[in-house]
Length: 509
Image (tube, rainbow, N blue to C red; front, side):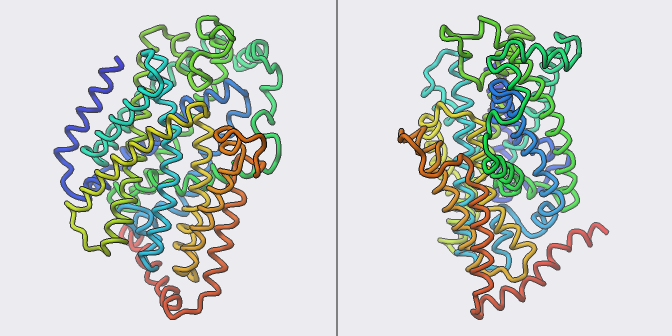
């Protein structure tokens, strides 16, 4: 079953490669994706290894507190729906840097936007590679390093040949299958509990080592600063994820973009309800079953594999094969979308717009995209091996912190604040990115867990509260103090941008 899924996705890539001839097809699927298809593809991007394996693993580990990620992921969607989607579709072509540079100087703005996009993509890729490596290691007994290399090679093939068309259709198919599989698993858990949530929670409290503590907050986030910082990252980071923002360029107009968010919100909300049931079901049906525990009493494969073990507990080997194959297809689809976003930042924003000043033709830009895909694949393999022991949902939280700090402030201000200048956008993005990355390195995750130091310089795991504040403050300060002639022209050009952003809505009327 596992190899059938891989073969099917490769067949889709072959089909898509025959239809990918131009930049428009490679980056945006020619704008021919419908709202429902795009909504499923966006949901597919969200229902990643971090969501399916990571959140259910966090609920298995900490109970109630594991839901902070699913809630935070979901509440970011109204921001995209009401603030971002329409204007993004009307102002841009392939990347969110198109929107930011609409009335600002392209070279500095695209440079910092591409850096923010690449930092977000790389962190997100680490989470997916860790999930994929652990899954293959568990299923086939391969060494973790070999498993990560296999995922990286397949990812490079998908993106290099199929582009956005292949990535979108793989996402749609695996989203439908994952929703069906997760629904079956949740129903099986509830059936074992007599369809009583009270029974589910009582049995979870009885068997979990933390007892009643799993039903109270504070297990993951013990201080209010961390809670606020993570909440800001999850809420606003959604609107700064480059692989999600790229999806709005695959539909025909702003109305379809708005409808895409509507469909995606429904699918994602339903899925996160299921992860809650799956996590608590794993506590009851997996945590106390010796088949799924090693000699030390820990879960085989780590907490990220709780949902995979639950599949076997509820549906036997056949359902384990199905869920494992869908989980792997999920990871491949998400890493393909991430790699495509990273490659477009390198080829479209940096190479074509910054280094070649818009003079690169389609063939040249596509060649650079494919080279960038290979480079990102090699980097993702290396980092996936280094960060083997990190929880995938936690790693995605850090990616969201980068997106919320480096990408979202500049994108929002470029759309809604007439006084934003090139200098403000550049230094706002640079400060957000620099502070977020710096605090992440000095924080417990890297400084202690990876580098082996005794104590972190920065005490909090999540930097978004501080980095977002720095980004907005820098963008405001450098913009209002900019008295150059270029800045005056950029402020006047805001009216033209506003008219352009409203053209789609007028056309719909």
